[in-house]
Each structure stands twice: as structure tokens, then as C-alpha cells.
Image (cartoon, rainbow, N blue to C red; front, side):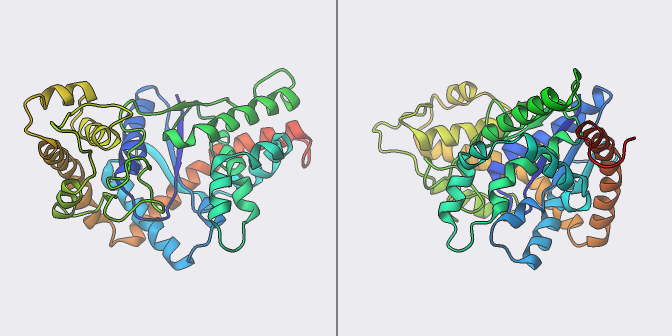
Amino acid sequence: MRIFSGIQPTGRKHLGNYIGAIRQYVGGQERAAAAGDVAIYCIVDLHATTVQYDPAVLRERLYDTTAILLAAGLDPERCILFRQGDVPEHTELCWLLCSVTALGELSRMHQFRDKSVAQRELVSAGLLFYPVLQAADVLAYRAVEVPVGEDQREHLELMRDVATRFNARFGGGRDILVVPEHRIPAVGARIMDLQDPTRKMSTTGSSEEGTVYVLDEPGAIEKKMRRAVTDSDDPPAIRRGDDKPGVTNLIDILAACSARTPEEVVASLADARGYGDLKAAAAAAVVEELRPVRERFAELRPDERLLEQTLAAGAEQARALAGATLSEVREAMGVGPPR
């Protein structure tokens, strides 16, 4: 059971990233090892170049992301962790997969439409072809499982279509590329902004007060949780529902950080005096969940040489796997000399 996922190095990592992706990575590392395979995790610096960015900041954020992943529990002895830009097989496979990717599909992607509208200057071609590179990232490793957030479901479906089309056109009756399955967490797949619970907590679109960062100090987390938007129900009703987005978000956060179901959280707060008790419980759970990550990050982040060594070792392993897939793809497509 091979697992692959990529994470952007842009922005400060927040609670939504942690619950929806990073914590899944750690669990996937163990599940893949137990199945006799490997989990592969990529910090996608090439994807980060599709929008306006500062090169120096990108490099700093990449080291931050690497240190957070290691601090959260990824072990380079038990998984492959590398930087996308160190493995050129990704970009070559992306180009080859363009032959089985429809332009219309790319232009209809929600991410492309949203980000292209938000761009004030150049709308790069890279933004349009982002999902093809994302498909190459995964398909290069013949991964069967891709842990993603709910917002990436559309890209995963495109990836599956691309693999299916490639096999039908070039496979000669066999599946050269593996059609992957997504894995979305049952709880915490969409952590919402604490100040605007109708919007997802994100690196760029969220409010500062509504975003809990992985490296926030306990006091900052507690302050943000106390100020979280709920509703004006009187008496307060602690339950999940589409009509209660703020309360639902806090319940989901508490459930994800305390290893309980939302139903168990609601039951445990049956005697709560109001939303203040919910906020306090959620804050305490988040603080305890993130404390060891923040402390370990402080130990790892200063040693950039060690971080580079870790990424380089992972890239060497990744190139061996991706190179084998790319060789078969080139042969099937008639590209380059015959093997």
C-alpha cells in the first residue's frame, strides 16, 4: 500500500493543515510500513511558483515546513521526505501527461478560476497546469492512496482520469499507471476560520484572528479560541448543523484534537453552561495537541544543514522510484530511444 502526498511550503502552517494533512502523513507512514511498503511525502516548491512569491521567503518557508513535518512525527527512516524541485522526473512526466489531459478540464478547475480572478497581475500558465504536475507527483510513484483535504477532491478525480486515459491509450492492455484513491479524514477534513466559519481556514484567505497556527504559543491559541464566532442562540445549543457553522467548527476541532467523535464531544458538553465551556475545552485540546510539535520544531529548525541532508537523501530515494515509472511511460509513448 504505497501512499503519496504533497504539501505547499508557502505560508505558515495552521491547524487545518495539521489536522487535514500533516497528522494523516504520520498515520500513513505507519500504515504503509505495516503493509511492507512506503509512504512518500513531497514538499512541492515547484507548485509554489505558480503565483507571485518572494524566492527568499519560499526557501525559508520550505525549511519551516520540513521542520514541522519532522517535529510532527515523520521519520526519514520510515518514509521518504523530499523537495519536489530536486526530482526532475516530476516535470518531465507532467509534460508527457499533458497529452492525455483536456484543456477544458483544467480551465474548469475551481482552484484555477479562484486564483486567476484573485491575481492582480500575470495569470501564469503554471496555474492552469498545476493539476497536471500534481498528477505527475502522485502517478510517478504508483501510489494507491493519496491523503488530501476535501478541497483537493476535484484534483484527485482529474488525476484518476489522466491515469485511466493514459493506460487506455498507451498501456497496450496493461496498467502502466496506478489509478489512486483519495483518503479524506472523517473528522477535521475542513477546519474553518474561527472568525468566519463559512470559510475554510487557509494560508492566504483567512483572517489572522481566525487562524490558529501550528507554532502559536498557548496564550495566542486560547485568545483566538475565546474570540471564536459562534451564534446568538439563547439558550446556547452545543450541536452540529449547517445552521450552526461556528459551533460545528469548534466541535470538530475538539473532536479531532481529543481523539473523539463529534457525537462524543457533544455528549460530554451536555451540562455545559454555554459556548464558553466549548471554547475552553477546544483551546485546551489544541494547545496539548500542538505543544510537542512546537517544542520539537524549536530544536530542529535552526539546523538547516541537517534539513538539507534529510531532503537530499529523500530525493535520491524518490528519483529511483520515479525514474522507473518515467522510463516505462517514455517507452510506451515512443519517446526517446527504445529500451
